[in-house]
Image (cartoon, rainbow, N blue to C red):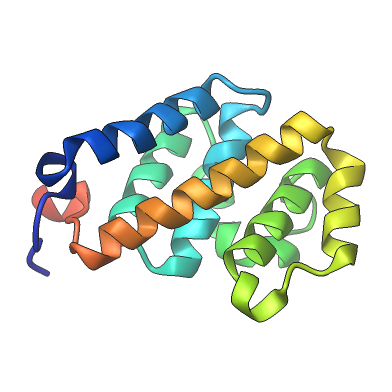
Length: 151
């Protein structure tokens, strides 16, 4: 895979605006580990190698076990490995990411709104939207994951 352009350098002002939202969410109403689990799942759905590598490493640094990390793609079948809150956040991340397919059913919203207060749900949805945008940049411009650079 050959990187097409470095979009963060090519349009720094736009990149900085997205990075500012990212920084705001890292300091927001939700635990960083929860947000990073959602970032990882969204990135998996979108096939963004750069983001999958980055968020996997971030989660490992936060102390998430390798076993839990490996189960993110199949979190529904992972039993008690994921908390109820994590499962609801991952489900919300999937339905929002797949909006063209799901239309985000009322039942999905009701489940998420029952677990997260309004600010948390808004922050979670901002995080999902942000990661979908970053995934599109990463895939469109073929951002190279750090793990590839080390080989």
